[in-house]
Image 1 (cartoon, chains in turn cyan, yellow, green, blue):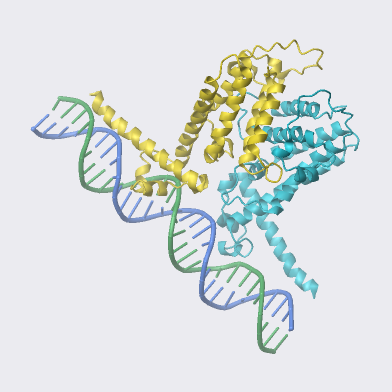
Image 2: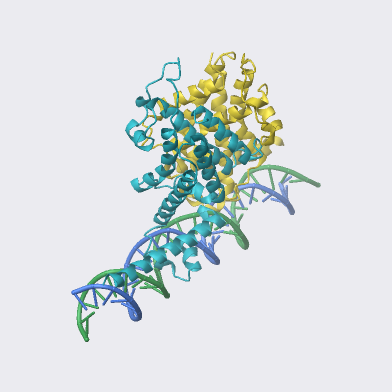
Length: 231
Length: 231
DNA sequence: GATTAACGAGAGCACTGCTCTCGCAAACAG
DNA sequence: CTGTTTGCGAGAGCAGTGCTCTCGTTAATC
């Protein structure tokens, strides 16, 4: 009984995956603006209305692609991090950051999909937020598990209370083991990495940076120092 | 003779300005994807084909809007910087950074236009690059003119040669007075500011940051320390 | 074997960017 | 003042879009 049902459901799943695959191909070729449901249907030998059995709207297709992109990126980073000895915080940091950049440069259009201008109805369903947190969680874990012998960082200037502007509960879940007074630097590092990639991929570095790959390594290194991840 | 010609040219200029104004309004209401030449023409009591006398294509209109946005932002930052005593590098830094954020939060759609996903034919004509450099020039001037008593920063670890990956000539023009070994930190600060705004405006901070304005001030402060701009 | 549900096809609606032709009127040259 | 050029708006039209609705067909369920 369930086998029959499964054959149906599985066929549907296959079709959905095929549609997303064609959509990804078209986006890679003609950017997100060039994605048209009619062209997807044409490419699949279907009539356009048939696609609406699977995606009620164009934005729904895009949302599915966004979710996939987040998870694909997250998976890549998790794997890169897993390959390095757990105690080697600096190595994990470098590997993860590089994995992010590698994914981004290999999939620039998917990167734009998730880190570029949001689509009009920019409702971020919790599903999306979770997927987006995957990368952040990896970076958070690295920082949290690094037994930073950081004595209370000496006579630093008065730390402003980050709970004024941060969701400390949410952050504690993403990067357990990190002291709240380090949240700001952590978020800044996260922002720097993706700000870099956004600038690189969106052409903002034209005229100032001639080898983004080399620069990225130095940036990642500086961030590691700032985060006290360097051995 | 020229007066007559000017009346023509001036009328044309006025029309172009009116078109851009309506386009800006529509973008603010329905985001860039919702901008349609036909709606602009409708709003102006014209027929759609008439608009093509002024902008040969939709992208051309968008390019004009992008240029305006860059210059508007640049002007805002230049003014904010000019209001602070030249010798007060830290004050100038804070004022300029805040001006950037104020402009961005007041004009989120224009911000997305210039710092979001590039439009398909993402040819960045030199005109655009120049306008884009206006903001960078202000920040560069602040750093360059700050007589940082920075002794060779002591026994720092070996500086990698930034000329491997940076366009040192272009950078020297943007931030004269800044030592090449400080270029990296300068670019990182620039990236951090816009990465922050991109994350804030594009919803990436949802769930982690609850008051971006407060956080921004702290970020700007940290950057000032890193850039040795703090008195 | 009868019923229900999923599906693809096809026509159609309202909309888009863009092209082309046609008259009108302002600017110019003699 | 006359004739010509040039810029302009109107209108029709083309190809394309997202999306809706109806209608047979086919596959799963009872």
